[in-house]
Image 1 (spheres, rainbow, N blue to C red):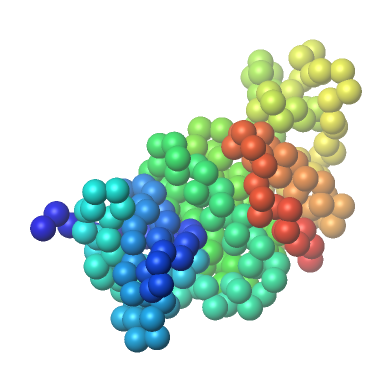
Image 2 (image 1 turned 180 degrees about the horizontal axis):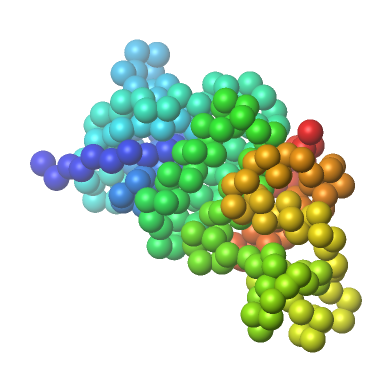
Length: 243
């Protein structure tokens, strides 16, 4: 029987028939997996609760013709209940898994999986504000995918910064020589916050004022949606309250 085993985080689920679900997961070694979980909607299901969004599992799969089949699932991280109980965390987590789903249509590495699991764990434990956690995740996920933004040196010419003009389409800050007319300008605090979020420097990120946090969130949302080539539905419902 052709089977394989992997760690995976549940991105989303869809009902199938009367008792089954199609579960979409991002795995550590196999990228995105779409598999049928048979009977998980029945009350007596052996692992139904483990295959809900934001849960992390060690699962065994049978290779099917069109969809794989979940044979076993052991919990590695039960983050769903804590995330769902807090609306800002819930909306942030939805934006994260939607981004992971989109990025996994391209080449993925174990780094994508580990980054997402770490971000969901941080949300569940309320280590940082959900808005900052989401913005950091988005910047770092895009960087892993090859779209790392520049917040210091010119993204076009490499000219040493600091620069203040930020152009999403050009990859970050750009020098005045190449900045399009009317390009948005970011102040030093907002650029410092964006750099801190990309590097995971939480003490610096949390020390930023609310105006810089709000402006940085807008920049991250625009940068993310440009590179994903279409809007993130989850961001429409995102609570952008940072404090």
